Image (tube, rainbow, N blue to C red; front, top):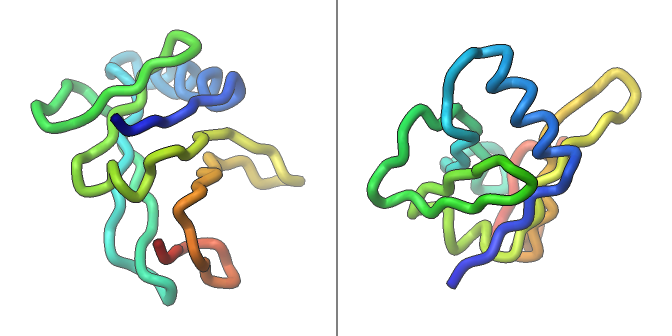
Length: 108
């Protein structure tokens, strides 16, 4: 069975954006072919559970992973970081073999 960890910082941010939006079950994560290294993460709101999504729940929030992304994200940690003026979700993904210099795409 696949595993995904949600840090407390990521959970706080997911809760915050859902509260601002006023609806939603959680965060949906998928991947798409993109960039110079192969794939990029796609984040969206999950307004309903889709039958083939896998749901991970931790710290009171849910992250739904699309089936095409499940193998690539297995063992990953979803974090939310502040680096200077930049704030973003970071995926600490043990399956990544290489990523582009700008960090926008990865290879598994």
